[in-house]
Each structure stands twice: as C-alpha cells, then as structure tokens.
Image (cartoon, rainbow, N blue to C red):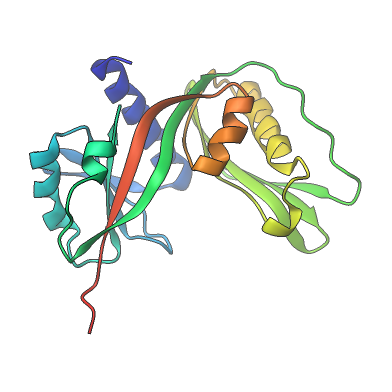
Length: 218
C-alpha cells in the first residue's frame, strides 16, 4: 500500500467511525483527535506513521491521563511498540489491524430458532442484535457515509461463541450496507475478529498500536 493510499484509508475510517457514533473531532498538533467519550476513554489522538521522534513528542497529550489514548497506524507498528515508555504511558492495544473490503453479496447464514434478530436504526447508524430471550448473544453496528461503511463493536457474548453468530452479524450488516448504497468497508479489527473478517474477504491493510495514559500509583 502506498503512503497516500494509507492516509486516504485512515481518513475514511476516522470520518465514517465518528459519523457512526455521532462523535466530534478536532485537530491536535496536526493530527485528528476523536472525542470518544466512552467507558474506555475520553479522547483518541490518531497519527499516521509519524516517525519515532514525533510519536514520542505526542506522549505529552496522554501522559498521566488514563482517559486519553494515542493510536499510531502504520505499515509496521513494531518500531513504535518497541519504544521505552515513560511511567505515565502504557500499551493498551497492540493486536489491532485496520482492514478494508469492497462489498459483494454474501449469503446470510440463517439463525437458529432459539435466537431472535432485532434492529435499532438511527440516522447515523444501525445496530443489529441477535438475542436469546432477554440476553444479547451477538451484536454489531454499521455506519454509512456515502459509499463508505464502517463496522463497529461487532461482538459475540462468550456463552454464545462458536455458533456462527459473528458471521451472521457481519453478513447481515454487509447486506444492509449494500442496500443503502455503500460499496466499500473499513474497520479496526482485533486479532480474534481479524480471522472472521478475512474469511469474509476483508484484507488487512495497516497495523494499529494504541497507548493510554497511566495514572500515577500511590
């Protein structure tokens, strides 16, 4: 992947992800900062292969703040992962991959009768749930902006794993994307999720490494 293509893919992911969640973005030291305001973090500053020296200079934005995240996206994130971190910074995620695909029709695996599907659709996103009684067995969210779609928070509850529910959710969301005019997808995948996405035709494009600020210990 060329650097230009990489930057373009990352920009598409950030814009579509922020749109799907209804998030605000700003610019910090020339890099996009997403105001996530979630249970796990308040902000996420995202940089694209800035070089080690520049990356280290960005630590000041998260150091000591356990609600601030700094993510670097690169062809190879291992040099960034090998850096010696100051006491106020820790590695949060080192197993994520930015993935992309061009959509095509795929068969949606049928649900076992014990499960019930449910949609929650808003202007900026659609959430799909597979429920077992009053429990959520699997779920996923899709946000569509023009021809781009991002998949977010695709999860299967541990008690219901290995039943094909993740594939069912992804196939259902893909069908939704096609029906609503999207032709290409982008997402941030965990190591576990990557295996599923690759089996559905998604391709790994770029490494992701996320650091968090670490509050001082007593």
